[in-house]
Amino acid sequence: MFIDENNPLYEDLLVREYLDFIADLRGMSGKERKQNTDRTVEEAGLKEVYHRPIHELSKGYHQRVGLAAAIIHRPSILILDEPTDGLDPNQKDIVRQLIREVSKNKAIILSSHILEEAEEICDRVIVIAEGRIVTDRLVSELLDSRGRLSTAFKQLTSPQTFAGGDNL
Image (cartoon, rainbow, N blue to C red; front, side, top):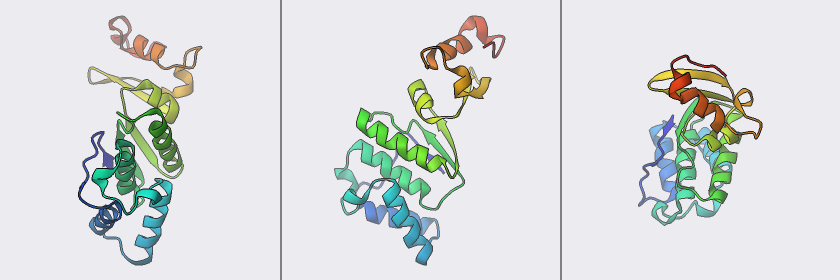
């Protein structure tokens, strides 16, 4: 399942209606549907907005509704594109925690140019520059003395080192 940074949703629907719609699209029914919906609403922290129209929700809740729609059927792989883009620090923390929880049971591919995001969420980083993979390493291997990925990223993508690949 893929979630785009803009997270298009049917804004006139209630959160409940939207998740029901997604469950219908996924062919979910009966006990599985109820269990997955209840679990997803809990995981995504949507209880307090479950009966509200999506257009009334903050961007943070929009992201959570989109993530809930992506995980309601329990896919084995989840692809996220800039999942916290435009969120305030509190919302970022909530969405990142949700991603960490979800990642315990499935593979998540996170596409982001926000290195802080990768530091916070990812175990492994693949840096792509000019259409080529320049490194594929554990985050812990790439962190500098201050615990930041930015130094490694700059080195890996600079014109001097880019031509030679991963020189870290």
